[in-house]
Length: 196
Picture (cartoon, rainbow, N blue to C red):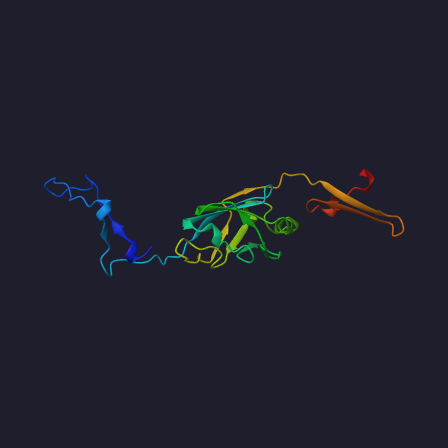
């Protein structure tokens, strides 16, 4: 959109004058073009207003103050999960979305990213330690304006309630090695060898 493609039509009754007379109709077939110098391009950066994280589904939901372009998401490096004191921050490396352009985008985190977040006990274990930074340019609005640098605590958080599943295992008597592979990170301190 620019000054050359900006026209206005007025239907009846759009507005009346002080005597109660209707404004003159400007039909859409003969719309009035914006006057020279009276068109101001959108240069306002979109702002990430809130976000939600579901650790079971791996969906990060981002809400902006204006419509953003879903295809502009920078998955690799655009968003950083912030760790609480003593922890290490984690930068997302991937993801995908089926969201259309809009004010809310739902990002499906890559499995590797989700697993790395689950491994970090200093982040995303409860609402008040679920915090992200959206880097400048991690998303753009419909006019190509980069999102402003924003750091937020989650407005909603859903814990991981999906139980881990054994995928496969390796058993090597020569090396006295027994390896269990699960579909998500597990806490080694909870392992009970007698339960095998």
